[in-house]
Picture 1 (spheres, one colour):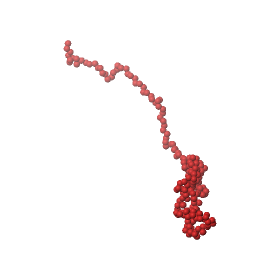
Picture 2 (picture 1 turned 30 degrees about the horizontal axis):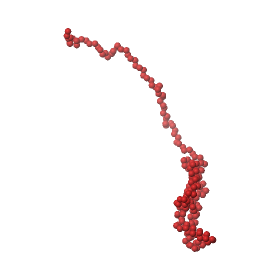
Picture 3 (picture 1 turned 30 degrees about the vertical axis):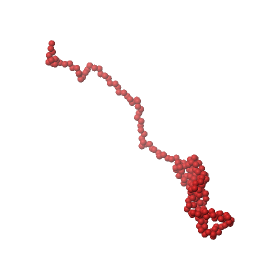
Picture 4 (picture 1 turned 180 degrees about the horizontal axis):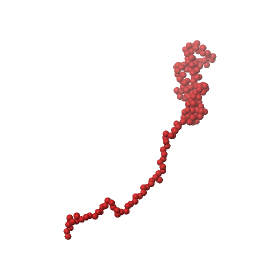
Length: 201
């Protein structure tokens, strides 16, 4: 039996897809997870404006230690500057040949016994100027080293500086090295031609 296509197409159809279905069980939504227990309270940042930052103050040095360091520095400087000044005086004041003439004069005086400067000047008029330069040189050499009063006048201001700048103070180890240098320098310097005449008058 042949199907009538028009008849088949004319039949009513069943609704298969319905936008509002009523034949199902609703699924309950799972409750939202609470993660707040895993984290602590948010840290509060300190108020930087309220924090008073005090500038770092360098600790004040002991005045007695500062005085000791100051005196050691001055003594060391004195031991260095004295031979340097003497060498400079020799090169500036004495002329070439002056020391040789003074040595010859001393030898001649020793050979004659009693021999006065007036006799030497009478014998050699130019020798008067050699004596004048030698006298000036000797006087300057005598004043090359610091006097006790000068050391005292330098110690107090330097001690104040060392109190302010503590890092400039001498540690015991450095103080020992300076003391050894001051003792050994006059003994070693004559071996160095540039310093020989400064340490040996």
